[in-house]
Length: 438
Image 1 (spheres, rainbow, N blue to C red):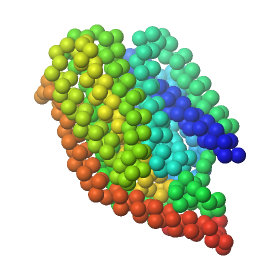
Image 2 (image 1 turned 180 degrees about the horizontal axis):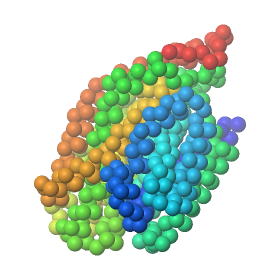
Image 3 (image 1 turned 90 degrees about the horizontal axis):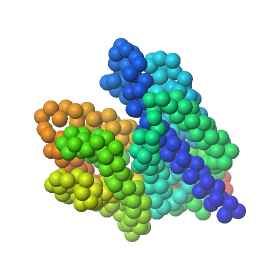
Image 4 (image 1 turned 180 degrees about the vertical axis):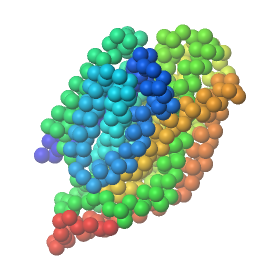
């Protein structure tokens, strides 16, 4: 029975991983496809999408709503719906006769990405706290892998001619994942793997209430984690966007060379996520603040390698590519541990909402960085601008992380005490199903 549960758990995690991988793989191609479609439209049709990417805007608008729904309802049907919506949006984009209908369909795709908060919250209920950084690092791998796959396929995909077929195929992938979620995925009880609850059968049903939800915006640890995500993602987006300009405009690399030179950084991220997850979980077993140690390395060390890379004149050299790989590796140490830290201080029935807020700030970074970059280019050379836009946010993150060291242990202990009380109430013979321990 136990082996069957483990197999079912890992099968569900792999389904969720492929949800994230293919959804973000489509996201990699959304911008080039939008450029192809907009070439055949008038400026009056495309003005909104030229200013704001509609998929990211609609994702931000619906993130908190999605988080609340995932915390108040069964998560498996909502994930199925999110995957189905993604498939519908891909097909609608593929058959769109005008840029306006393409933009509306693209907005639906953005709404489907609200499901990410439910994926992380659901995954957290499959594993004990000292395994969560590793699991989140596995799920987070979907993003760099989607970029690597997209970079490799970008030059051979011939999007100008085949973008409609590509979107139809992405829709097929989405509908396949919808079917897999419906037939193979299992949903765990909220909080079932918390130390105080993992050895007892759970009778209660726990859902988000407005009284409990106040903690999402008042708990010091959560506020600091949200800000760490906001400022921690800025350098990542800056390096992705700015390095293309730096290598093509300053060093004269051709487009294929530029994209191939991104791969060492992505390889570093692919290596860094599991290393950060393993190190974070091991440190968490020793001390409650242990997850913050890889975060410290993730905000401190990349700046050293970035300064070294800035001093290399030949961007084709192995030394430069090594520095880029190390920047990617150390940058990736933080995020899985920050996501796991959200779960460490948040009630199980609030975790999707807390994750949604974290993803809101992450998406805000994705929107802010290109804007800051374009404004900064008017006043600074691209090399110096990249340095400023990376080192300043990392320095802010070090200050925020110092504050988190003071607050997180207390907030973890408060949650553990609450879970212990909940476990005591679960074992009472008079325990009523549906009891709410607000």
